[in-house]
Image (cartoon, rainbow, N blue to C red; front, side, top):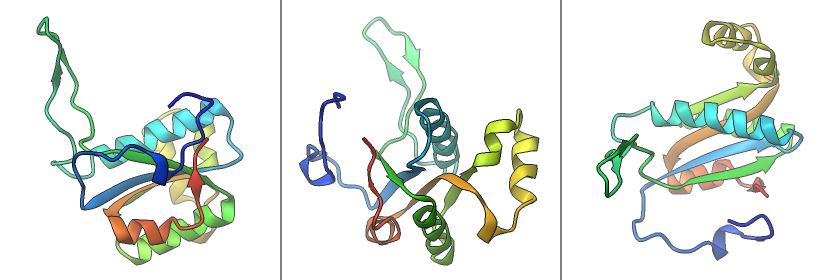
Length: 152
């Protein structure tokens, strides 16, 4: 999408394949651009490694160079305020939907063990969420993220 585009879910081109599941990243609407990219990358790494069949085959160009495989299905990136992010987390966990979280504290940690410790130190309802990613049945995910808007 070009930065001047004003796309909504309904105006996006139809994909040739219809997936039973949906992957959504919801970002806190107060993040800086570098934070949005960082959070999205980390959350998508969790989604991509959450099941063995989520990625396709490696890519190859005409010259035979091979590139890493990517997720097989589209990813929607949305934004919401802190209260909606907390509600998304609670609904997703309540419905057993695989979920990844990124908290504000993770911006100041420097490695995986410290990241996990920063999340482990906080009760679930007090997590200072700046991003959440989930993958699940389309209709369930749509209900969980209701109220979030497409990221601009």
